[in-house]
Image 1: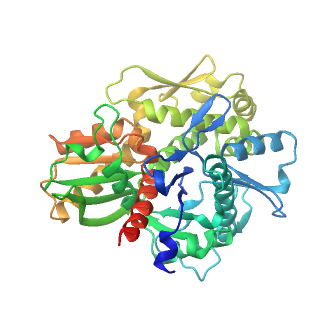
Image 2: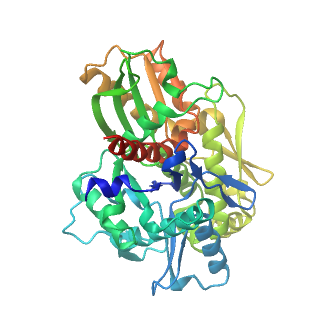
Length: 436
């Protein structure tokens, strides 16, 4: 692609295809500090990103994503019309770092039906891209598709093959080759921290970092924890001391542990039937737990409560041949002392509830420690956190506890750091080539 064609773009639009949540952001090159994002809604829920899920009719004639896909699939299951559709959730990390593109990589939907991963990725990106373009047309009148530079973010741990699958899916989704850039998520997050101000100080997130100081940037998403070591230069730019590396230590592992607990509590057959026949109720559980993830505290005493749908209660009591959900719990040798059922809610002691997070956070801290020990970064005392999972209060607490007297900075709008950073990254590249 000719450099001049990149320089002529009028709009930069970033797509963050996340493990658990996805979204987009865009800005005009002439007003690049003003970044547009979308507030996704479902009922009373408002979120800066939408769930990474895809509802796709089996003849490919109809598709939607995010909260719309969740809500529509719930309606379809209640009407017994869902068998004509695929419903895929959290499928991004099927593209492992060592993925073999010669093999037919398959995604399995909620019913266990398989579809080639390339098609799932293609339709998901197309849904996001179409929604993004409509938003751009509304905010920036007269913008044509050819005026837009699309930036698609990918994890640092992905190899060339995984990136190629993502690129090809984006092209099949309607993004032109010359209008597409692939950006690493940690690079985008770093750029975000250089430019975005903290609400309480009106200074950049890295404003407290003095020139010559090294710091570690930790991007904690749903699927991965990406780590980069930087040094701030005299001109306030960043020099990469240690290239980005990552492990599968994101918030999804916590979700999986919690859902596995519920499966063990009621029984696998009951749980799978509940998911299959009561999608709306299942979705409510996942959304409630997502809220709990962001509010649980290390020093909080007492208990954590989460509502349990009556559909799950009825299925469980019928399957176990008992009259109450309390009896279901008491029959469970593994968990009878770990949880209670009061007024339609499961109730955990907070110490036990924090156990859903412990393994993932412990492994994350261990991985950070290994990175620091193996690099020339043992003097690092500043940790900058971005990504949705960094909003879980247990994470900075664990880092401070392990590393002692360190400063932990959580970026403003941490969950949007990669998205907005990707916009800044591409815009700066465009502006620099114009200056040249």
